[in-house]
Length: 253
Image (tube, rainbow, N blue to C red):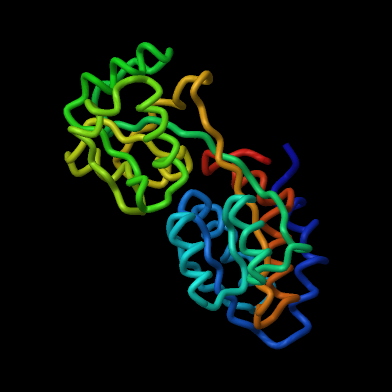
C-alpha cells in the first residue's frame, strides 16, 4: 500500500487551485452512507485550501426533494440516477458528475450480542423471522437500502412478518436501534453500521441478494465558488479517498 503521506501529496497540486483565491464556504449535501467519507476528508481539505465545508446529510430521496424545492448547495453526493434527474432540472452541472464509491448492505447487532447466522439466504431469512424486532430505513423516507429491503422482504415472502415487528427509521444511523435495545437486528449500508459505536457488524447480506448502492458527486450549477467545489469533488474521487473508503466500509465504484 502506498504511503498515505505520498498519496496526500499527490492531490496538493489540484487543491492548490483553490488556495490562490479567497476562502469560500462550501455547502456539501450528502446521502447518509457517504457522510463518513466526506467528514473524514473535510479537515484536510479545509487545512490545505482555507475553505470551510458545511456538511449536511439526509436520505437520497429527501435530498432530491430539498434541492428540487430550491435549497442552495455547492456539492452534492447522491446516486447517479438522482444526479441525472437533478442535471435535467438544471440543478447540477452534468459535466462535473463523477462516480465515487459503492457500498453494500450489512447486518448489525449490539456489541456483545450473539451474531445470527446470515451465511445463506435461508439462514438470513430465518434470522429475520427469529428476531424480536428488525430495524431498517423507512422506505417512505426515500433511503436506498430501505426501498430495496421492502422489495426484498416481499420477494422472500416474509413482508407481513417483518412489517409486524419493523422498527422503521426515517433517516440517520439505523444501527443505533440495536444499541439502545429497540431492535435485535439492524440492516443498513455497511458504512453507516461502522459509524455507530456499540454496534457490531455481523457481515454483509448474502451475495445472491446483495444490493450495492453507487454514489456519485456533482457540483451545483449555482455553486458560489465553482473552482473550490470542483476541487473538493476531485478530492472525493482521488487515490487518497480510496483508503478512507476502505476504512469506512465502502469500495471504489
